[in-house]
Image (cartoon, rainbow, N blue to C red; front, side, top):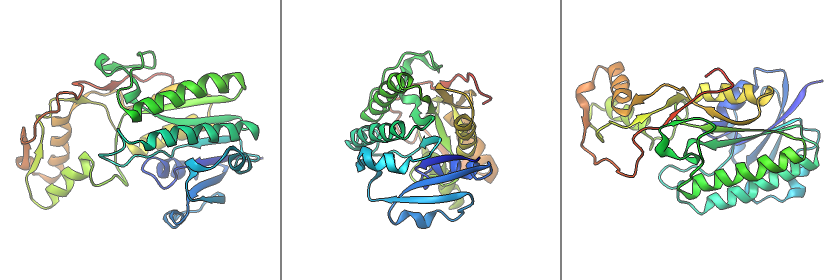
Length: 280
């Protein structure tokens, strides 16, 4: 009998990649989508049902209990993530509260596994190299809400004997990325033959294609891995080198203007993930 997988956030940056890889598996997929956004789901392969909601974070436990009926695995990829706003937004508290309701409904429906999406910002970023054993030290409402979700669900779901995986994302880029983020900004300027204004670019980061992240999260969701897991490349690279690699494809490295923007001195100099338990 096919496993039933419920996915939230299927129209989002990460969620659409998870959906893509789930559709290559022998599973039945149930989607929870905001009303009006179902039109964005073009490929309905293996999608057996779609629950529409005005606000999935506003639904109560009873609603989620019904949605999770006969579901084996819940992959919760939805969260408020508007670039330039999400880090400090009050909406993070709504996402935290709503996620707890999702988990409660899943438990009441005897779901066997819940997979949540965390962030590398949960860690003490002064450590530089971040493993799952690095102390947690969230500094923004976004990171704090993610951390609180993880800590609350880890203990509770263990007590309820429900498998729980928490996938901490690092610096993702790729298909469907918001135009306000770094890579689309660089590419748009290069395509227009305009100068690309950047900081010094000395920051060291861990970049990963969102497609690879979607593949890993799908494998984790259908496999036996539990607990916190870094979704990262494990490869350190400076923002300068990363930008130069992009510009090389256009043969326009001359358009990069490093130092045109001031460095953010609260920005950590190094954020690199340490893989563990999975093949990054």
